[in-house]
Image (cartoon, rainbow, N blue to C red; front, top):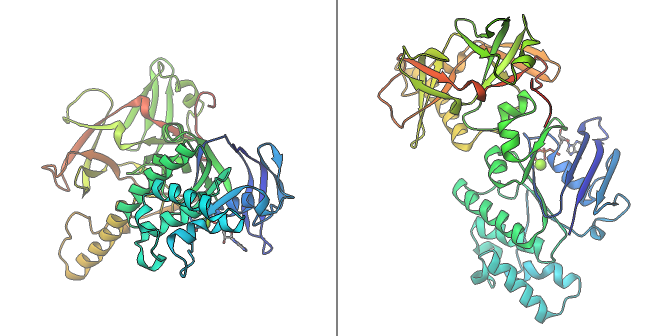
Length: 433
Ligand SMILES: Nc1ncnc2c1ncn2[C@@H]1O[C@H](COP(=O)(O)OP(=O)(O)OP(=O)(O)O)[C@@H](O)[C@H]1O
Ligand SMILES: [Mg+2]
């Protein structure tokens, strides 16, 4: 039905803001493509250029292989649901959904039939006579989607359509949206700043930072093999642990990754060993997700890191321990609200509780009072600003474990799950996917 080709597109606003910077990407027929990135990275601008609401400064956009920059929005067979969608308040649900059909002259009987089909697919068949003011937020959102898809567009553009809804409803609608678009076989581009949403919904994800495309691939590809430090830091909750390591090659044995007080040893049998060995005598960034770390007895053999618990976060189904291992962490700028909702809330909560404990002199529950005051040192890399600070290694534990801050904890590291990045933030690896 529809393919999209964005060819080296740049958008510079009159005030000089570069909103989109030489982005190329293609969307296949029937694909669900998610554009992911923090606020201001150019997501909406890309969608608006595809829809014909803005013109690119440079580059070309093709739909079904045909250049469309000369076509008016209405001639592009595109439906768009906006970030701040609006329904016509004086019209019923049925009239709202049917409005585009009425405009294009569809007779009342077939119109009613199409409205009925779309409404029942969206689970709002029983509220067709109501006005938008008599609907819940989720129902209103479904009406907006119904209005967009009722004309069977070739391409469906959705700009953060769920951002105004509570998290439970969002999760429910995510599955409905992907189910519906797959059922209709309509090519979809979906914008979000929520990495969990992107990973659960997408066939492929394109990750943007400051208008620049950082990585593109299936959720498994971008999560499992992030192309840059930024993508590594952006995807997943808890965030990937990113530690600074100095590399020392022992030709007859292994490659030592020194984290300060401790080291890990990459064997020559590891397929990435030669690539990492190029950095002998230099500092690189080693990424380890919480799932690559398993708590073990302190005297366990193998690839083990030892630390002390600085603080714990309880998430119900699991607890996270943050370990001081005497290493330096690299923090990446502009993560925005990329983290999972509950992490944002927990983060905000620990700030408040830390402030509370400073006021009262009493230790707060769970969060270390000095967590937010950890000393940071900033370095401006080629790919943006990174910060160095004492590492707090995130480790998954069973819910409400019998440990508390101050306890020692040892973890084994799955060496084959480590990620390596150079000082520009690019992945160090064998080959390119
Ligand atoms: N009409 C405009 N004139 C000047 N600058 C603009 C205009 N519209 C957007 N921008 C700027 O372009 C950049 C990209 O904006 P865009 O709306 O595409 O971001 P976004 O990724 O959709 O962000 P959000 O997640 O907050 O919606 C931002 O720096 C924004 O301030
Ligand atoms: Mg936007």
